[in-house]
Image (cartoon, rainbow, N blue to C red; front, side):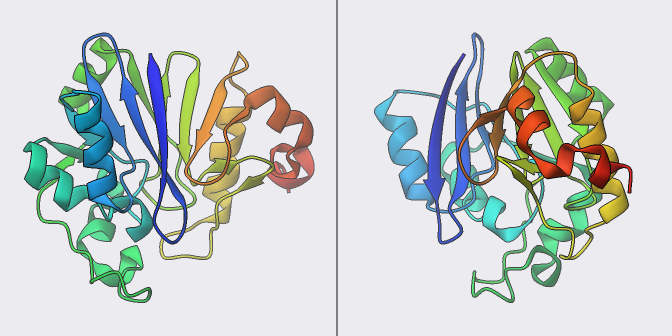
Length: 209
């Protein structure tokens, strides 16, 4: 597996280009579709699909441009469907991001989960930052979106955020049985064992409160 991180847009979102044995995927293309396209084309890659950890504007901004360029499917959890189609819910109407309302998308379901699993991609529902937030597990790597950052976590005061749900989701990640590499939606990569030791929000004083 090869992972390329592109940090994009005014909120410095991490977009990941992941090359697997059989497929190439794009995770969270938040902005600057031309930058993403330039990298993909420079590597002679053929992307197979886009998958998003959630539907906030800073994570979906480049989706339309990539769909137009590569004619590829875009997957997101069903609980964030209203978010990607509503500029008020995804935040674009408040931040001057051209009122993003996506028209072309696929909701993650049992059938496409089988396709993901076949290619070593496991989808974990981890709501809290948004209703449809997911964590994408590939090998020893977790793409956590805005659930978990280095020494911090995502906000719960935006549309659809829920403090109780994010605590449950963090506990699910904390209880995993190996030292995964964490690739977050913002900021540097980190490790699960490091976060359990150093991240206040993975401690019992927060999760169990």
